[in-house]
Image: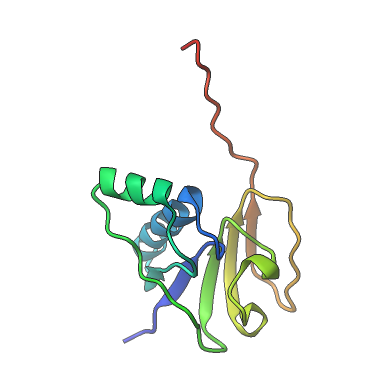
Length: 123
């Protein structure tokens, strides 16, 4: 069986980092890739509340990813925000809304878009 591509956000995962990983897992699997959302940090209280409210399970925590593993990054693109050995992983895609601060020695899919939700208290 094909090895799973791991999808993860930054090491201090907030709600958009965790939910982006879950959504990207769903999309990648529907596109035919064997993918699995994981987290590289502890889930905060807000995210736990959202997952409980939506009746979603927490995605598994991974402390280490073996060198050469194929991964997709969501909600981050800086090595200081990522897993310790990020420079030794094969990054297939980066999906992010932050300023690009990333270098890769090979071509990869990179998409950044300033997507934001605004709240208007008068509505």
